[in-house]
Image (cartoon, rainbow, N blue to C red; front, side, top):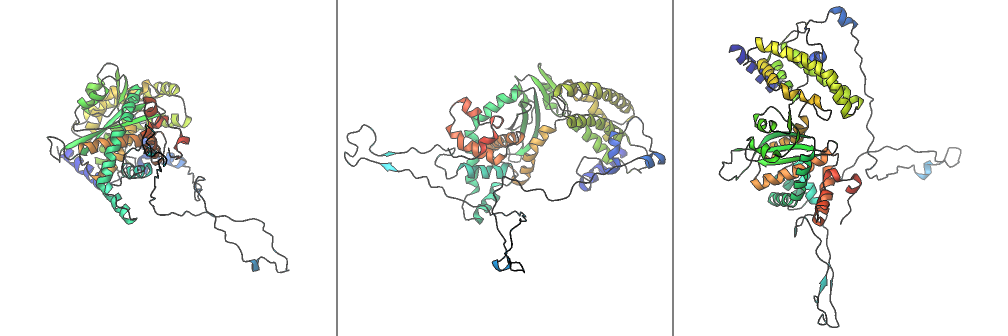
Length: 493
């Protein structure tokens, strides 16, 4: 009991004052790939023979992007100085060019849409069956009768949902340039965008379910005004990543609960791989026929890192701790992945390499875990790490079956991170409608980023063309996986 409390104190101190990164420190970095079976220290002779090579990156400023507009400012000599001492005029033999970046503060432009009216002076329209006065119809807009263009909407949505700038901060930024746009107005824009984009979300659900793999994760969100719930209640934002491996789709979904009924609600008819962390809410879905449930090695590694951080300080000359041995096994698995990534092998060859190399390490790791489970207190952090890994073992090892799979669920965690960062700034959603709209806009932005599309350019293109979409094919052409980069050059419709 005392040892367990001491571990908790050391872990708390490490979280408060230690490194936030889960990377091993320099003195332990090489231990990540050491043979974990032996814990003997390096001899002085081995340390002397060890050769460490350092590669120094080339210094210098990166060149500025070619696509940026350029303005030339010529600094020339006065005409009086272009004459040689012998009296002959100097010839220009070249030039030296240096480039610097300039920035003009954000500016607002008012676009005036002028629609001329026409009427007949002769008969005043009496002889015609049509209207007396003719005028061009109002161009369709994503927010009818609103003052915001597609560019302003894209700017405000990207600022909040990509750059984590709450609407109240944007309101003050607009005030500084002389424009009165309230946070309530911007919130209304977000909700209307969410409604107009519902056809896109339905198509994205189809893409998610059609892929071979779905990564899933969830995080908390506070939502005001939920029926029958206090404003202090915790709700959840779920994220799913799936579809084509090379052109993925990400979907955020707001739900008031973390119940296991939520993943069953959305993926009850799904067939394929499902990768999650060890949360029990996924168990029922993972046991469903047609679904292969994959575990996450990053979560297993995190528990060994907690055991390492909570352990007593150890002299460099002492043997490796048990937590370091466990990390060593996991490090060897990731070293295989790193080498395969560097070689750029195909999915098929990746699966073969895993079955030839990773399975051997996994067998050794399993034996070590079983030995440790017999002599490690289950309530200790190391015991919890060992127990978690053994309980999740079947799911953790299934990534070796298919080269398209990954050993961890980091893709889903990375996708949900911008939401977590934004939540620290805007704190809560004002209503369930607002939370649902946020989920829609996060889905579009994160899917664009996953397909290597700049979010502002994509949203501006989407908001400009969405009002003209009529059929399912029109909507599908507006999804990020269907977008060609050349289409994103802004051309008003």
